[in-house]
Image (cartoon, rainbow, N blue to C red):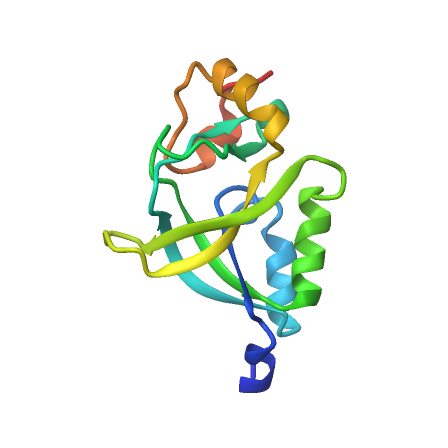
Length: 154
């Protein structure tokens, strides 16, 4: 990918679930990287703690409840406006599934805030119920175990 293509990827998005490498929706990011509409920036962790839970069909949800849960690990991508539209569509931002909100991140295994990004949080109306049904026991990383397990299924 050339410098010009990388320059157009201005929005930083933090992925913590099925968009990560090795999971079902990562093919979207692979396609966007092939066309120059996404650039992988590395593995990051949320600066604050947030609840990460599984909802229906083992779908991961990050809840906008800072201070609860764990520091969540995931992947950071820079995306173009086209790429952002594609990810928003997948995440159902216009259908009330997720909302894209600002988040502070640190590179994996570091403590200081070094990256501002946006993450896809569960629609606010889901927060309390998802947190309660998960018995307030979120996890720090969405992994194969959570994808196959029965964690917090509604």
